Image (tube, rainbow, N blue to C red; front, side, top):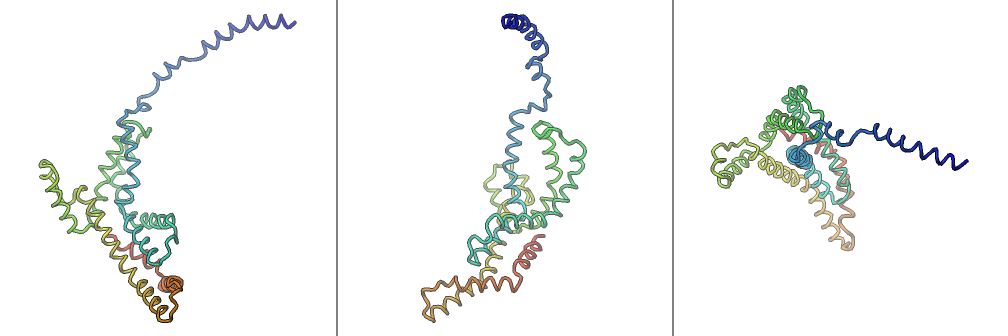
Length: 259
């Protein structure tokens, strides 16, 4: 009985293999039928990856995030608590305040590029059409960002970087340089924001420095040199910050400091 079953399987197996070979499509024909958008060029892939990698730096440097996070870090150092609140919390607070401050500018940027966004959106992120779409959107949305950078940049810094650019740049690029070009505005905005952040930091440090100085002198006069001044000064600093509602005052001051 087993011999008859084995012989029957030998007779049927070639027919099954032939039917499966006819049913399976050729892999080369499937690859040839792929649309061109699924096979983007290497330049397009590199451009998309470069843009995605630079996006966090653009958010940090071309918005209010840098100034806010520097001021919050200086406040933490002035209090004398190195890890409270932790860096993740500070970055989260700075990000939320940045969204609040940058909302009007972001809305203007979206309205400027709304026509391009709704007219011809790409279906594939890595296609050549998507790269052209991104370039068109950036070109339309750059003017509100330019106005924001110019309003919050020091005129002295812009003039300094413009003078420096006329010395360093090649001759063909010097003729068309203006103070509102992004190559001048971006470094001017960064240095202006850092300067303002450290000016605010000085004002934050002064009352806490006075508390540290007074506590240290009192402990020294009492002969309690083995007791750390931070142990006494830290509760006083926290009490002062709570009494004047320091976090609310600081956040409101940072928000209104942007024009």
